[in-house]
Image (cartoon, rainbow, N blue to C red):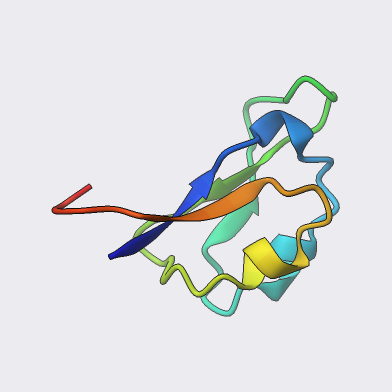
Amino acid sequence: MEKLVIRHEDWCKNCEFCIRSCPKGALSAAENRINAKGYPPVQVDYEKCIACGVCFNVCPDYVFEIAEVSGNG
């Protein structure tokens, strides 16, 4: 099973390409934290995310990774 992983939250500059491109509306900007660049980083609603990879493909800053997970992980 594949799962979306935010590997580099501090690289996010809140361009919102991923948020606008997500077909399931699973991504949003964090409301209560900022990253090292001073932006609210993207966050994932795993209830909605289907690990389709659209966010991975549109992100100019390589924030995401689609990782293979085993079991319930």
